[in-house]
Image (cartoon, rainbow, N blue to C red; front, side):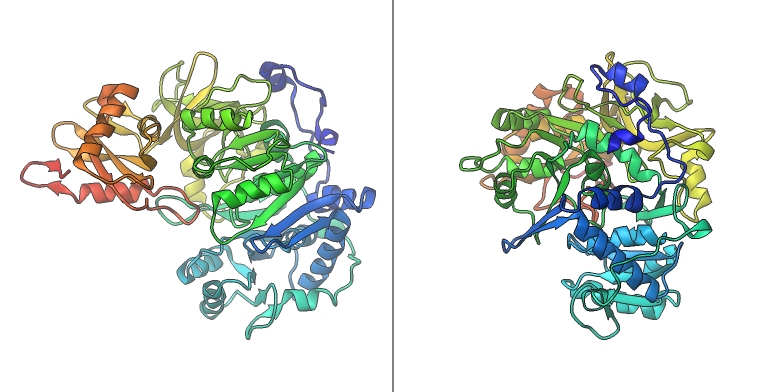
Amino acid sequence: MYLDYLSCPVQYATYDDFNKKFQITKPECFNFAYDVADRIAAEEPDRLAVLWTDESGQCIRYTFGELMEESNRAANWFTSLGIVKGDRVMLVLRRHLQFWPILMALHKIGAVAVPATHLLTEKDVIYRVNAAGIRMIVATYRNETILSACLAAQQACPGLQTLAILKGRREGFVSYNQEVLACSPQWMRPTGDAYPCNEDPLLLYFTSGTTGMPKMVQHNHYYPLGHIVTAVYWQQCVNGGIHLTISETGWAKSVWGKLYGQWLAGSAVFVYEFERFIARDVLRQLSQHGITSFCAPPTMYRYLLQESFDGYDLSKLQHCSVAGEPLNPDMAAEWLKRTHVPLLEAFGQTELVVTLATFPFMKVCPGSMGKPSPLFDVDLIDEDGNSCPPGVTGEIVVRADPQARPVGMFGGYYQDGDRTQSVWADGIYHTGDVAWRDEWGYYWYVGRSDDVIKSSGYRIGPFEVESALLEHPAVLETAITGAPDELRGQVVKATIVLKPGYLASEELKKELQEHVKHTTAPYKYPRIIEFVSELPKTISGKIRRVELRQKAETQIDPSKGEPKI
């Protein structure tokens, strides 16, 4: 179906061919729920939309015909509760199957879906409800903290009119599963100005920044079309395939890999509902259900590689992709050795769809984010705004007119003109991420602009040092930050989580330092090493480097002006 939205639907032999010829044609009026999901349901009602399973072994095959019927019922249910076009509805639904029909129902009405993680605290929920003007919350029944937070938010936020629980009964909540079945499976499509499409708001995501309060990223109804590049040309989802992206529905990554692009590509989405990531359980799902394409962050691939692959049939696994944090080349090599499937790395943000990627007609360079998506005019610029030559570090930017932005690009931060202006000025969107570009046009990640370490005149990106440390058999996870130093300005500090069976010691510190000196440029080695049981992370799993930097700043010895080891 995705071919219907391309101006030049051809097979591409090279990246240059792809970059020059690929173009999405924006329909005059586009709504994903009607024009994709319902269209598939009308043409192939028995076609698989979602294959859902959980830790108990329960397995549900959910078709597009069932999706259309339930989303129609849900749309009628929402309207009976007073939800209209433009209202913002928060969804805290983990990986429950009902997320998909509920989201399609909101798209049909024109209400703005605000997905959120079930890991939020009461303070988080209240902040989001107030900031976004949430009118209704639909929440999981499997998290008492969230349900209590919803009740507290309703007391604190007058605009929050309705609370719904997905299943069962609870005081203060209406029940989705008990009420939606009483609603009609027929839905009257809106007309005129009430019809939601094109530039109308579709989704609102709170970013999980490592500093400051979360920003509100808003996308319009054209946004799903941008994920044609994500799903077809990076993840390589195929018609009739089954795709698994590891992500809870509260994160933007879920619509990168569990919905829009996959259905446009003709692939079903596989959903595994679990409480805690257990590598052997995920391997079993890949094997048992014949997953054809798989996407996960590097940390999860790292845990998978800690397991033996004996007894798992991964013969149907054709394509694997990775994003969310930099990829260690040694890990990529080990995955290729075991599965014979290369890991295709990419870069993107909540504000964008896939922006840089290793596409199928490119040579795989492990550790590289690949080359720019044809959707975007991507560049690297220095502090003066000049394009960086090969080998020179700069900020990743996207050149775009905010009034005629590319498909898949956000239009600004909701109700926050100052933040929007701080990242998007003079036709340039600043990602805040730093990289360098080699002579072949591949981009290599360095870090966030505020993560780059300046030591004795050198600029040191955390990823190179992290990558070197991860090659050592003792290191499970690590984060590199700068620590204050009177002579050098900053020195490199490594905060390390060891693998089981390894003990922290001064001897191991020295061994790791020597390892880095021999793996990368010696001036990059960590002069300070701290062993910890876990790294501080945001609720989305990103390492909170700002917390580690602040900790290093408080460990300075005033008498020597040096951080304590």
